[in-house]
Image 1: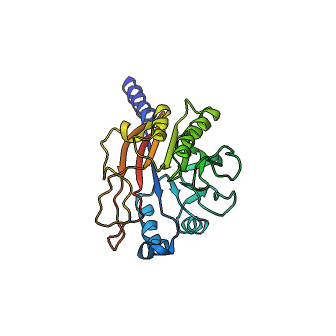
Image 2: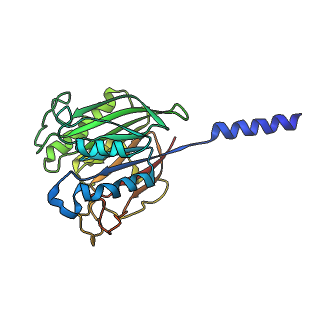
Length: 275
């Protein structure tokens, strides 16, 4: 009888101690620009769909998606839904949409705010060249009832003041939502090099996933490829930051289309977290 009790205790301990992991991808999918010709969205979308289906991320944050692109992905992907709005406050302009696997997560709350002095309304901030936004969602896992707070964003590509202020605003939002002890992910195209003030601001409050990953970076050093099929990306401008999370893997994915061209002018970033 004692042996049976011992075995039961061991089994219960293993079950309670069992850790699960989730995969998240951040991907600037490049806006719908017919001038891209062979690299235009309609020529790439089936390859991008296959890419997403192949990796099957639990959560996917995209940048530069329009309503047309987002709704097409939403209709084409099984078991996924998205949250987010256009940067005009409705369906126009850029989305920083977050797609999630509905078999694994459900959304408790979500919002989109503007990277500006007036974050609650559609607006251009500081020296930015365009309206920039951040989409936030509080997810709860259907497996363990654990929560995960995800911010997906796209900083301006020109305004240096805007980049720094955008980073400060996101950190402020994390504080306002009282997430200091919660599990947080901030992902996106930050249009910033690692030595820029915007990245220093993020590093002061969050962990750079690439720095705390249990495994070394897999993939090229950089994330921007210029749509040049012969170029190895050297400059990192896309990031995934975390808080209160264990990062198992961090990857810059160099997957190609069937014709050998890039999926986008940015590489997707994949992160695997333990929770």
